[in-house]
Image (cartoon, rainbow, N blue to C red; front, side, top):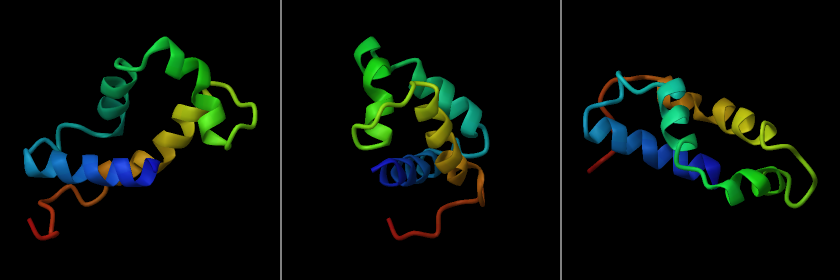
Length: 80
């Protein structure tokens, strides 16, 4: 799911022309600012299918996948 969401976010950022200005750090800061307290409390369980994990584990994993945002920052080659 995370890969799908990040792939779609990458396509959207390319489509609206902010792909060069919005890297992983900026993207993560923007999305984490929107997380509710409830999501922060449960995010670790989403990462490992119900196994205990901390909130800090979750964004670290997302950040490792989110690096797609910084790759090939030219226009998207996918059909519109």
